[in-house]
Image: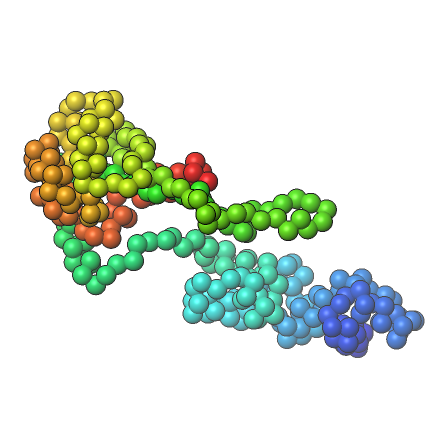
Length: 299
């Protein structure tokens, strides 16, 4: 035990450097049997996790984290701060990073990424609930109702694209101080329309840079029918149309055209069924299509 105490003393004297601690230990105790440099860190970890320099049976089998006291401390931290990191938890408890991972995995905890969602106003909640109740009622009355609805969305892509400094790098023997230009003086953007109905992808289609009610009505009247040519006629005949509350969507000519083309079968701000504001997450496209294009096709 005295030897282990001296080893831990040398480890502290050299600020937790195992190799330096071994050299100092050799100088101080030349007649003793020399351990491996990794033994110094093991002793320190055992003292922090077990309160003793003696390795327990759990420590020897690499199962230190299963001790109730350590496990409880880790789980308490994660319960209080669900967004904390395993490294922050390990540093706080002076544990090995892999120890924290093991405890969390053994208790069925997994790191789930946060999902960006649309911010809601106080008045939005009741409208969303009302729409969801109506939608569920339609599903009960007609099982294939979700497939008969043309859900669409529009997105703007610019030449700046999507930039993450954590995922983009330059390989070089010396730092080239690489950059990626952004906020161009002569910038451009592309407006893309896309929809999904009955497992058919409609579009994508490039809209004018600045859309208004007149341009949008022309799109609905002349372009959309061509995009729907591959959709079976039986689906088109009972199809519902959905769009949100963009200014161009609420133009009187647009509403009149939709009333004539989809009588009683369209969802929108001024339609027979009011589409709740700030609700892109209620559309099927929000779960895959446009986000995928953002990340892959329009970089």
